[in-house]
Image (spheres, rainbow, N blue to C red):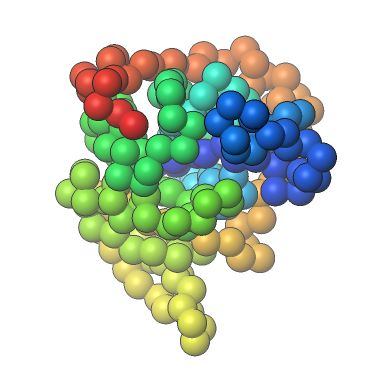
Length: 221
């Protein structure tokens, strides 16, 4: 089973107001000393992929479209024992719209090759728009199911548990498929072992520019 997990870096949701500053020229808030962290729903998605790999051997690739510090997200993913990591380096706009993010991720995934399973957090922990997963599925022409919190192998396919407003739904599907992952008691992110953290910095990490994906950097907003 080849699985790809889309990761995102966000401002620490527990950041105090004092860590923000006002840009006098743009007249808007800017980050001062606030920390950047891995989005929690991305971590839920990665944990779900890791649990599936325990049940059914395979490889996990972590993919992030982010700024210079996006490497931190991927090093953590490697420390959690993802097999591969790829950073698409973002330039300019620090908050691209979901359609732009989906188009960049789709180009990166096509460059990487075929995957059986693609996982995206249900929404980002900063803006919470929750559209990237569906838009990415459309870009890739893949079937799509949202708010999944558990994945199990079922013969040549997968058995899924999905959260709804009134409880849970069970579904089965055949790869390839794209799922958005929500949080539950079953996919709380594991804490990386010290040895795995150290080893994560020895593992290769691919870095691509927008141009490397064959996209027009000037059209990416």
